[in-house]
Image 1 (tube, rainbow, N blue to C red):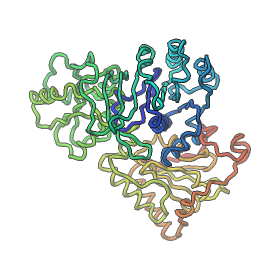
Image 2 (cartoon, rainbow, N blue to C red; image 1 turned 90 degrees about the horizontal axis):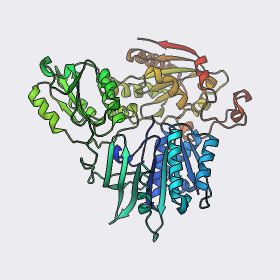
Image 3 (cartoon, rainbow, N blue to C red; image 1 turned 60 degrees about the horizontal axis):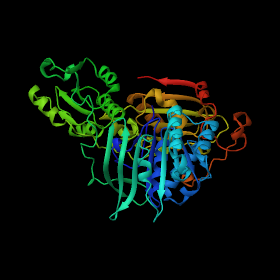
Image 4 (cartoon, one colour; image 1 turned 45 degrees about the vertical axis):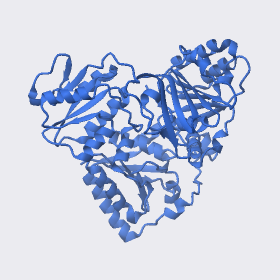
Length: 535
């Protein structure tokens, strides 16, 4: 099930994760809530959909340019819808729910209700809260009520605490003693429950908030889970092939262990790393286990037959591991080290997906269009950084539909993820996808181009291995040197919008001259002539 997070960086999941099918309440000083609300919406749109119910649909325009631009992009992409409501009259709460059912809301969406306290009539507050609770469970959506407290007005917390049986979390965003705090009254998430904890926040002044490292999560904040003392271990992680102590669960493979962990909360997990084995597989496993289970699980990596490089060790720790056990460590010492991490809670901030985590690790910064003369060098630089971690990349050559211009088509390509690069010759566009598996190429292309790929291109060729990518780059670079392909850097930087008008057969929005952000028939991408170059 999709889960959402409060838009405060470095806030531990146990204090800010929004579980599916639940209702949460955040009260806030009137001047503080809007940027956190919008950051939360933008994060939700990165992996799904969000609905924003508010009295002032244009309020985001007053936010810092970067954040307001991100909200506008979510609206443009169709991942965010804003509904203006008239609050205060009796029964409005129930009518909102009926209207949400009428318009249709995707399962797993985030429903953010701004000013929700004013929608609840005091005489029926428990009934209205119960209606939202039941709707969230039935629809499979997450509901977040944002309730402002104007200066001089009484606090709402006491009212909501009396309804604790209706809400899965209650927190307050407020300014105190010159600092902004995220005060958790209680918060239920899959990683546990915390209560009466406060996190001091800091901001860059441009709409981003994060937890000040001087205020960290107390390890005792989460309830002790029933499986706190359990140990899951791969057989290869047991030194000398010895037997496991009573109570340890031994698995032949890491995948078997991962499957068994699906219902776990806080056991200790020991995974072996054999010298020379692909690091990416281990990194992905650690990231997925940490992301799916939460901060209470303890993850240890046992080296086998060699030592991890320092940079690789730091990578695993950043992706969710608590401990790396050296190869030469005996079993008694290993048990002691595992005991030392009991009660620990992982408080690191994880990116929303593994590919983004890899991007941050290899420190790739360049993204988007690259002049033909510089394309090979730029891609080679990214591949060199990624090679040490065994990250898979892809190069795709897309042949333009006859009659379409190179510049016009490039304007339909929006690349924001560091490491994703593109260029063009006279007939094709070349797209380099950083940290992209073969099965994800189609969906990634759909995301990058604002018109269906099947409309813009007639065929594609994929280069998947490092050797084939290098060969294709060398061939392109040779032609670019001889033909002096046009550099569109300045033209694209001008920000001129696309002007191409597809025929009416592509749907009413396109026929009217409006670019459909979500492809109206994405299955047509499979009608392309596809040639995959295998190693």
